[in-house]
Length: 151
View 1: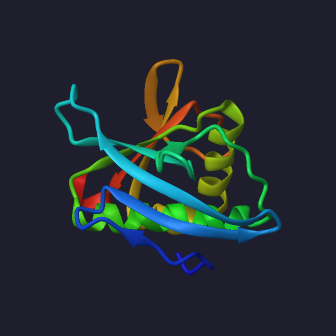
View 2 (view 1 turned 90 degrees about the vertical axis):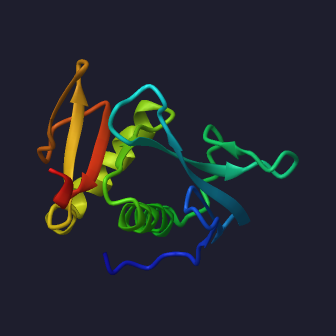
View 3 (view 1 turned 60 degrees about the vertical axis):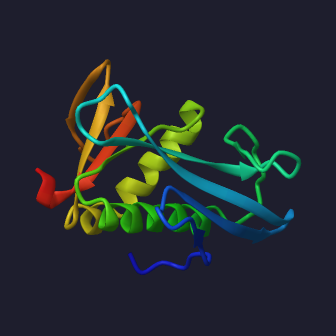
């Protein structure tokens, strides 16, 4: 996706990314983390995203910063999915917001760039404990994405 995004710093294994959100609340450190679900046969990774706690350095996905740069932040997070799945081409990435509103925000981003995303990714949506092929304008509780060569 050719969208404005922030510069990323990552760990060598690409399991963690950091960037600085610059906006009306100042500079806020953000973290994107990929953690593998160990109880799955498929390589499924949870995408965790949020603010970096300045005291502990840990990710907090409950803080609402309203820094005025939502689209740039979401484009930056999306770019980590591209980078992570380029390295780990058999990975499935699980995405669910910490609240239904945040999950809806992810869905709006997928809807907006759907035509571009589906050229490279298979997208599934979770509804009532079942996974379905993603359809625009349908509400889901969570999402799974993988590179198309894995399907």
